[in-house]
Image (tube, rainbow, N blue to C red; front, side, top):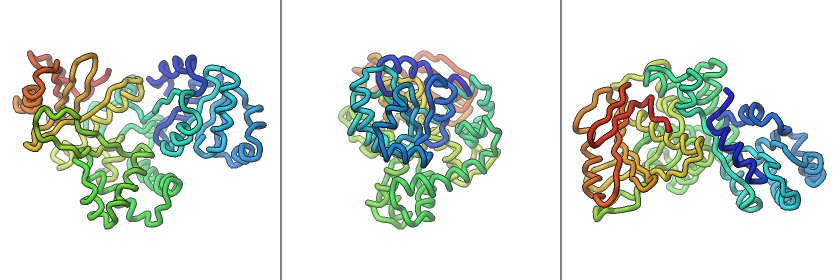
Length: 384
């Protein structure tokens, strides 16, 4: 698919920085994007052992051959290159001189912070967001199908069976990426850990319970979850920092970036996810929160996303501050709008009465509504 939304922002940054970095999960479309949209650049994959051998044997000569307008894909495979890149871009002062790409966020970002700080503009390319899916004609009318299919490009571009795709993805991820990030010997237990994380998607993160149910230590649970976050499988959503004189929940909530992978780990297979399924509401919430994150990444938005909950179980599912307004969201999978769906947003507003607040309900129906104090938006229409 040409014209990923990120493209226009990338073009701007190439004029302002010598190095542009594109990171994101494996198979999110980074290589395809770079080859299609950056065709003026030479493309080099550092997963090729022969190429890596050249880098290791003589990095200076390597960069002399590839002196400008080059894409280095899977660049985390050759961390030795970064200090030489620093020297070269400082000397040449060419904007857009190199594009670096990689799918292991920790290794890549560690190398960047050590050698290339201030010289790079960083983008995250995730699986398709719903706006991109809609533009390509791939967004299903049916909510259940949308959630179980997920958003990984290959499923739609190559017409793959989603169940088989995610089965292969998990096996490849555990056997390759996880092994590179951390020496995990018991891969069966790690796979169970992933499934238990999926079971807790949209819920407060409790390391002790997660460790106990997996049969591992608290420290191991933290380390393994860090691996999932580093490789763009899961992410934490932090609590909003203002307490409004109430006892606040301080633990983050756990989410998955892709609902197709989430459903697979929950044992939910194609084609239909029953709205009566006990996890349906959590999966829908995950869909919406992850969509907001993907819009942040793909549209270069600087929105810090949070949730809010107090000790009395009053909760706002999602909120962020923008242009002096506090935008708060209630997320409900129901196709029917009920008055009680607005209750928690009103409760929050009463605590935060000094703030300008915009209240929005995102629900599982198909029609948008404008009400006196609220916006009601269909899940299909939450595009920036």
